[in-house]
Image (cartoon, rainbow, N blue to C red):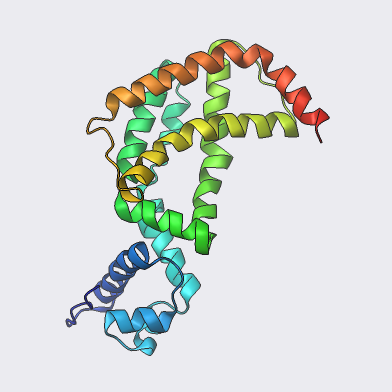
Length: 221
């Protein structure tokens, strides 16, 4: 990796320059780095780096905000909740926007590196999905199917696993492309539409049997 070009910049531009370099650095090298190593790669002193980011954790929080939160659209969940539109249409629209946002090499590689080396980034992002989007998708499919989903710890765990398995298949496009270096379809729209159709149809038809699976989960504990 080439060192960042030194320029006379104001504080905000210098901070952004360092952050942009750090994002690329972490995407290529992973999260097993020290601030001294990053400063050396930047071609600046460690005290200069600390002028903008007081420690490594603060830098990682800034990377999270820049790479993940800026691409998270708070309107996604609002749109998924709009029952004037069929759930298939809502899910397709959401997943097309979501895959467009996340299928970026730096996004994918930093997420994988975080999961393996320092989970503070991956855990924060998964928290967004687990606490809001996943329960919402499950609830909206149940509502359209005319089913009141069971409640309780085992019911919540099962719902999480069902939606997580489906949702993570779209993240896996990025793993295939940027980790495995395999080809993925150039046009993902038909794939997204087919997967949504299969998922919504299957889950809708299975909703009435969820109690059986939940009882089995409770009995195994």
